Length: 436
Image (tube, rainbow, N blue to C red; front, side, top):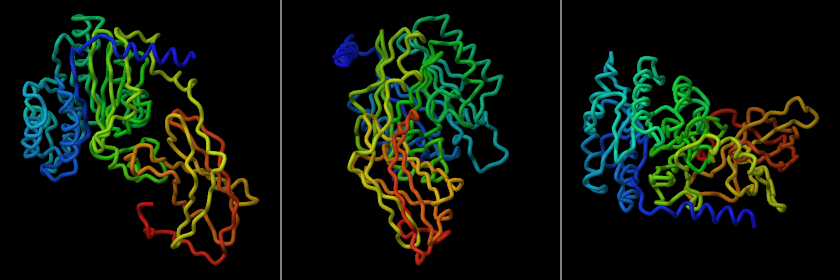
């Protein structure tokens, strides 16, 4: 009954207040080339088709629009898509990403590249670029070297101070390509900017939008609240995970090209409502769970903090779950029934121990398929095992632990079996089914 009451109160809050003051479409990391048939441009068109019925007043682009910085013909295609799908008077704000500065010509002049980029998009060359739209401050802040220099951060601080002086209670929307460190998913490794985080800690009004990490938006950690609010924008190119699971290519997820995602935001006087979408499927992600930020923001009343883990539970395998080992064309695979969770399974941790040798135990992290297109998700995951630690004629214990995105881990499925002495592993090269 208590949960129902909370849900009804939240629904009433969400639906109150009439029309939004501003409607915003948000995207980043397109990494496009100058061709209508290009993967990035095709996905950008799908994103704009998704935005079209929403009639946004403002478009925010978080960097890496280009895969290479010397892509001048791309901008004509970009403007053509804007004219075709979006309102005639739509406003835009852009920040540059690291890809905007990747050019073949040496030496590169990063300041000239930045100015050429924003000029081609019709934006003032000031950096930070600070504008006020319908009474709200928006600041786009760019840097090319995967870090923000003290000199540039001083300019950002001046812009933030100016925004606070103008209105100390309204949110300040900040666009950066790289995320502030240790906030949203994808910000805990080298991509997270410590100096940026330290600066923003002094501005509770900030709503930080960042890109670069390509992290799938299904993960609730893609919004974070502490001293300020941070949101990551995913990608229109390919999904990644900073945890670098075993079944990924570095950080690039298997079938990560299905994680084609964008955000929309509605600004009301008393709240922000942020919704997530898969542009490939023209589908809202978790339509019953938009991110709602009460205004003015007070850190002590924040909804999206690390404390969320206290209300979550670990995933669990169904009682009748089965697990089998498949030996197939010189490789080994584990197949099992998917674990269940009221949000989603984030990872499966697979532990492999040779019988009688507990010291041989090794653990491997495998990404689940929560980010994939709904039609392609599998009720029976299968993962190719690291054959280099398996030997024919020996027995092993395989344990599969399901984990959710905040780290809670459920009880494992176990399988004890012997690898036939007559089986031969291929220690290198490609399996017959490389997609597995």
